[in-house]
Length: 266
Picture 1 (cartoon, rainbow, N blue to C red):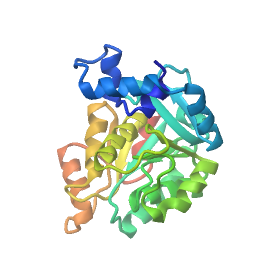
Picture 2 (picture 1 turned 180 degrees about the horizontal axis):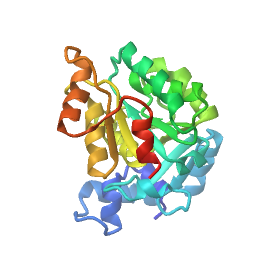
Picture 3 (picture 1 turned 135 degrees about the horizontal axis):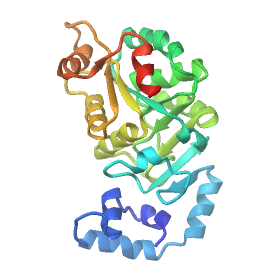
């Protein structure tokens, strides 16, 4: 059965592995219903609809699917995109952080971004705060940038980053593992983090509270054997507590772009 039909029927990455016999699991009633729904779908109609919306897609079997993402524990079996899909061939630095990022994140990215190799791409989640700053600073420095959505391409959240997203769709790339009409659900933001970690050669956290979702992305990067970087900060600032603790646990402290580049040149 075609991947796009399975995707529109709501089959998850884990369920897809169960179908293919690549994961231990049983064929639940819910999955059986999804398969029945997928059987009734017409691939041609779905792809035509995507074309009308300017959305492309690739599956895990396609040659253009990024090998670095294919190797993670639970890779998305399909990616929908708007923009330049060839950017997925570049080495990517994931940059994540607090939605309450302070001027410290902005100043740091302004200083560090020009010190990075211009062929490196910047990857983040198009959220308010550190994510949007990472995308904007990348574009200001003529670097490629990719945004990973936690919903479908017809949905947008938060509204404040819409202008940035539209610019990225023209000049960079915006991807999602979900069909265009998929809405917002809290669990999808966590699932999105594994794609940021999986596509990245390394993940850099600027500011993050102790319980920030950005630290989940960092942990996912660690589990996938990626480089992890943290920006040290004021011990009294709540936004620096997360990175400071991770540095104490062994994450690499970043003071300049060279601290990152030495890993990307391996």
